[in-house]
Image (cartoon, rainbow, N blue to C red; front, side, top):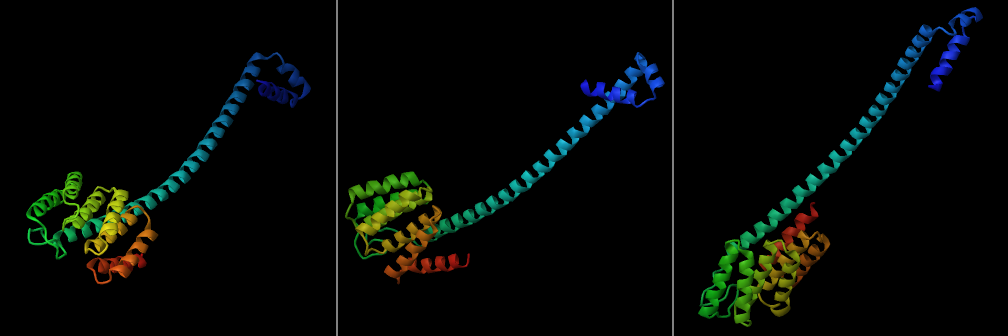
Length: 241
């Protein structure tokens, strides 16, 4: 309102004195001037609003571009993790296919003899793993170990407990289970496989350096084992990333 009054006074003062004198008290003229000034002021406000909106749109465009870049990075990371996870499960599947069946005459990967009861309980637990019932398999293998703690198949049972935890994506418990294999049966053929599974679990947890260290230790400790051959392949693939 003050700006309108000032503008009106400016317009009047710019006129010759006689004309200005005639305009004072002319309500029609005053209303017309006020209407035009109101319109000018409204247009000015509209322009400011448009300018503010344009600025906000540019800021939003920048945010969208930044978020799009972040999404692309995340998608790439997810794709990489999914591929790595598939590779790890493929390794488990390959080992399952090569697994020797537990029979009363002997133990998988060793010369020790397994009793018929031991072999039967082991087979039952392993079948649960093959069916994808990992929690049931863990419970069955743990029951097996309670009944046959020093049996010929005990190292294999402990190893599959670790693999079942790994299949459940419980990588910390998978590592802990496989470390029991290394602690109790370091000379058993399953020890090398246990180290390979530990490396897989470390990799899945994001501990790439730890996984590489485990793979190198595996190759050094069990150089002639099939697990060592797999470890060499993984290290070679890792160096090409």
